Image (cartoon, rainbow, N blue to C red; front, side, top):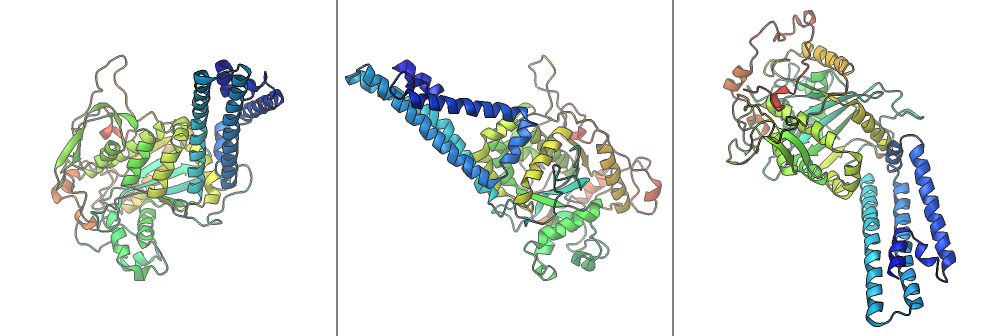
Length: 515
């Protein structure tokens, strides 16, 4: 009896073959064989991962799959009980032996029910996510893609604005704490990832916009050393009269500033708050990486509550977030480097198997903390694009003081530099891992650098206008080698060929000289 109960738990129908319900047993085995053949055929047709990802973008299919999983799970569990009862009766088990037999059947039913229940939970969560008007806030029909096999065939590049916002209970409004743009080649997936320093001053706006009319000579609202790009959001939120019928003027004005700064038109945006990033990393089970130096937790106007120690670490969401946001003993440019590194490290760690096992947690983290203008009707195209990016890889291009001074940017040169960076990204092989590694064969932590020189960061609760680096820090960051840096004015920008740094993350990689 025990043998047949366990066997039918593994091969549904097998336990019924020697009973009066043998026909039902053969039917169940035939259905199992048909399902296995279908899976093998699916694996042989094209890229199975890509095909599977395309299927899960259809909400109707997801609901159908969920119903199917429920029915299959119930039938599977029921045939275990039937086989157990049939063999118990045939062997005339009674008393304690009968209860033991029923207990074994119950145990097998639970063992089968757990993965089926997990599958139903994941499908339910995912189909609910597809119905979210916040996560997929774009209207169907906006930015229409090409018909046919390749939806990106008519679009050479896609530029996606990535914003990290800090909107906790201690904040006065929302502001972008992180500004990045991913410029993606749709054919190869090769991506140039630009980071814009949050203390970039006096940004300009596209001609004809409301912001350009108010600030024709660049953003000038909060006063000297306070007219930062991440303060544009606050200004716009305070002037709703300039943005009639716009539900999010801060996002609109910030998008204008980013587009004019880089000379790129953004196609979509994705915004995640800091709590959301922590939740996403936790949902993925953390991220393993080699920390380059001792990173303070807290600091600024508040106390330091701990440290992320150097060397090989497995960072949970809390520590991954502090790795990206810590300002104490650092400067904005090293912080920007760490932000790019952690984003790329999480991307490396997010393999399909891990993502599949984490769907319920990922859905919760996504639905509560992420906002985009991607229409759900375009989701299959974006999943396909994400798989191409996974293959093509990111190349980092942070706008540091070596590119242009944040306090007096050369806008013409910066646009030329962006164009040259995109061209450079197309020549690169998939970049090496940014996770870092210890010396091969050694159990010792990786060699790590010293903290970069610079003023301590400010308190996380400061308003945008207060997040300005001191004049001392600005002076320290000012380039001194005129032969290797762009001029501060735009007059001779056409005479200078943009210089592309080939190792832009060196200040936050293990073993780098960061002193």
